[in-house]
Image 1 (cartoon, rainbow, N blue to C red):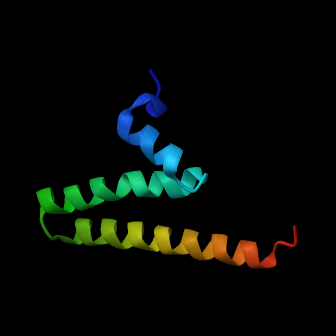
Image 2: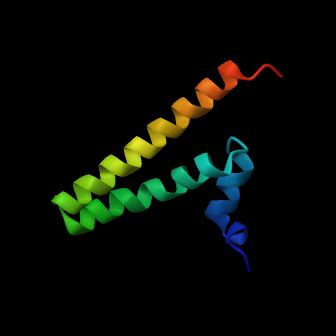
Length: 72
């Protein structure tokens, strides 16, 4: 059994943007929120949230600029 065989992961990969990094970020998001809810607000959870949002926004901007520059 692989990770793709799980129902939620399979659904995200099938309906996703055909981008494994973006799909992975979408799958990790609920775990980030859950960890913040369980652990409460602290420096660690704030850094976790900041890192997640920074990676997400950075990757979306990277893909956007990459498509602007690419001349396929």
